[in-house]
Image 1: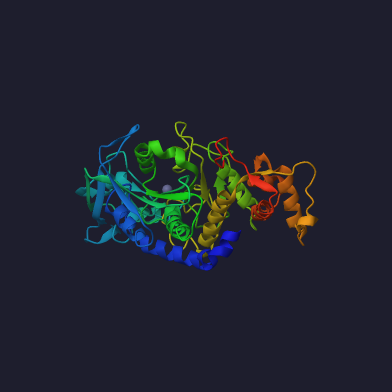
Image 2: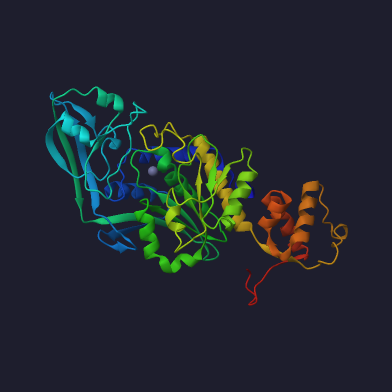
Length: 438
Ligand code: ZN
């Protein structure tokens, strides 16, 4: 669509390389739902986009939840009898269960095993585990390594703190011509995992930068938040402003080699649902459309019945459908610059449909207007067809997106036809009773 043409290299393949390299920089940081890893991540994003960092104190009530204590970790390991670190947080932060309480102990293997997590079905991968709302500690390792552990005592250290502090989140606002907003929500609380969800972090950062480079109709709000508690906290603190949100996307798992998947909002027929269906339907490799389920990422919160916001989810392979999900297999080799560039382009295409979607009225609805006299016959059949469809369906009740869907023509072709007809005085944009464009 034309946004690609306008922006040139900004949405060409090199954007994928740029996103991949930002993700590579963020990958080693030990993030969790609170703590310095999250702050450090936002600090890096703030070098690319204007970012406001918010701190919400532990103990703050947010709807049915409470902002938890802040977790930080400096080191963790399991040492064998020879003093060798056999499981080492410094080698991978996935080795420690996120939110583990501090511990210093010498434990026999049988007792230690109660705190060890493995994946017997994927014996070479280290699982990603959390203990957010249960006071516990643990280590994650490969099942193959577990099977090789000898009986005897092991030294266990987790040098962490769990104390009153705050929950940190970042917000980047790109002001448009109107206050109507498009929300992009990213969970940024996972440690060294690439697709889930540094892909979303990288994509959203570069989208915010790109959207800020030209005037747009909508304002865009990008949230970098811890999963679940971050979305609930943001919704609670911003409840009065939610009416401005005209569309939204949760972006997660968007860098793997699978095709794009879009999960509709709870409403199922929101404008963003149609826009995404249109873009995916006209893509060279058509994507997959899923209906809303109250299971997944933060769309669960935005689409909870008290809000019912028009927020869908943009992913590639859905979580749970790839074996690397929530394991050490979801590393930087699992995502590619090509897939990231494709996700970037498709999200922009969806936004471009929303930006350009209007509803018009044909001012000459009795019979077709004489197009030849006005020089409105185009050389290509598709353009003429688009002109006739726009004239026929522009009765004030069909948007350009409705017309594109009904005619099976690309949105941009329909939009261009409407632009020409409006210039020729044959269409007027539908206005409300007070003269406001609706
Ligand atoms: Zn996850």
